Image 1 (cartoon, rainbow, N blue to C red):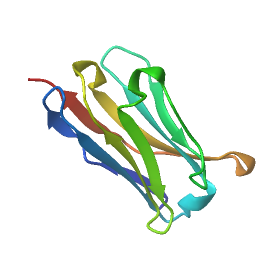
Image 2 (image 1 turned 180 degrees about the vertical axis):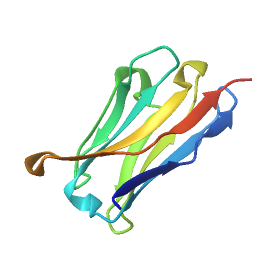
Image 3 (image 1 turned 120 degrees about the vertical axis):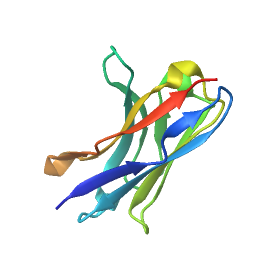
Image 4 (image 1 turned 90 degrees about the vertical axis):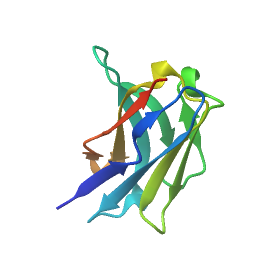
Length: 118
């Protein structure tokens, strides 16, 4: 069964760091662009960061620029989101998404909860 599984969420104090991981199972992540989205309570899902299939380019929503870093390890079939200087407004469920546009393939993980609170 094709799967994307996120891990690494949890409770952290403001100013702290977390590292989210996204592991692909039963498909080759190298062909896919990978994005992280988040959804806070009562809000719409928001695109946080995207990395190209080869890892050569990435983009971020303005609110996380300079604090979050998206990366990937195609040999390990994984992607990560390093989150530093976390703020209470970063509290959300974070989802991993893999898209291979030319093939029409689009996979989602089930999400991992990040709570930033003192």
